Length: 489
Image (cartoon, rainbow, N blue to C red):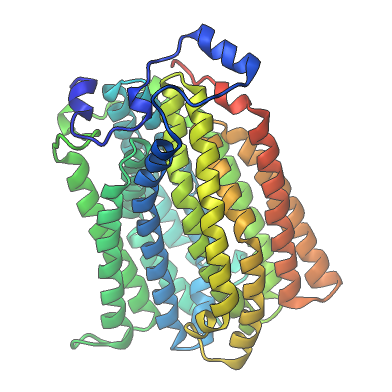
């Protein structure tokens, strides 16, 4: 299939109308750093491109997080210990997803590069290779996660009070791990091609299914048994499997409006070059995820030491804060895709224009979200649990959450630009410094040495986010990311 046929029915970007640059033009741009808007490209057009990709991702991720929030709210009505038990499963799931997420980062970046380079065959090869590797890896990880669920939970701080509920929840999650991982890869490939709308559709349907079965299985409606936490976990994997079925149908269904097309007849024979390209970007990302998870586990154990009710409060506030993560990640998805496509077309000037304006959009949106958290933080916390301690403490923590919004969102978007360029090593080093060095180090000082309790934990989080933002901005401003070369491209 030619590039013309592959894109004839797709929405065109401002980038698509520009010619490829030759190496002399790239070298001149690198020397002068001058980047006026190319002829025929307007600020309005660039913002339109950003929002065209970002808004479906924003809706998708927001609804996904909303489903997670509703999940936790429903569980919270049982007892605050149930919130703690579900919260404890988060880090083990993230640990097991690290390798899959690294493949997704590599997949998004490489699909974007090949789309920009007008090589749809290579983009589809990257998707097939990533799906093949993910299937093999996820089966092994699901088995290990199921067998070693209790040791993993003990490692992240589960106590005798919470280990049974948390173990039941995590083991059920492992049953749905493989379809979840494969769906992640489909989503990553589609986003790399600039198609965030398809992922929005199947994830939205999955979230509706999840919430519906929460209502049925947690409390025992429509003649079903009331399964509590077990019901919440079953509802989650039912929703995940729904997303998997629709995602596979979408990528396998031939459509003139879809850039990627998974055809079984093309085969899944390992391609060393494609695998190397994926891992050249994915391995540093896996290192970043590993550092992040280790740091979060250590930090989580520090927070657990403040007491079960305060850990439940922390879980609630982190869950609400995750809504703002979704905002930053949605705009970062757009930045990653557009930067990758720009560099695939040898247009570092457009990569810079897209990334700068995406950051502006992110910060503007984050300020609005900060105001929501300031004025409605107490009400949001109260949706999860009616314990007075949880509500009072959580309402105060929400001021931390509001303050961090511009830092967090701006950092997400610029880091997304770096990943789109393949500069994942830098983001891994920054994460090492901030999560392990700042968050856990200062968390120990504030919680253990100064006995500041949960508030000390959030002072540490604030320092982590602010310093991480500064380091990401410094790396971005250096500009080396615009000229990175990826193997055999």
